[in-house]
Amino acid sequence: WLVPSAQKNEMEPILVELGPQGQTQEMPPHEGEEFGYVLSGAILLHAGEKKHRVRTGESFCLHPSAAHFISNPGKRNAKFLWVSTPPNF
Image: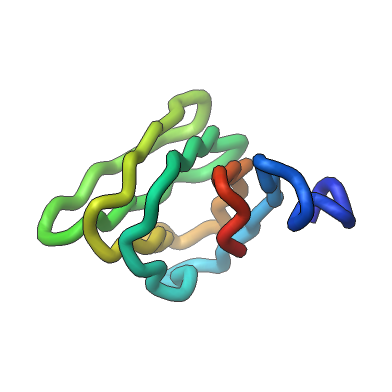
């Protein structure tokens, strides 16, 4: 967590580093929004049956109406900022 007490706020920012072939846990659909910005490497955003590649310097915005998670299909670490509202992590 970038802000240790963020869970009590409307928005929760975290810094995530995924190793090669790593992935986050699958998150259920929820009310709210999620935003991510890739600092290094590349990630795959899995949202329902869809997959979106997001590279260094690119971002994503998600209204999670389906289960979703992020994976690192690469051979190097990927680092990204992930912000959820309401707090979900």
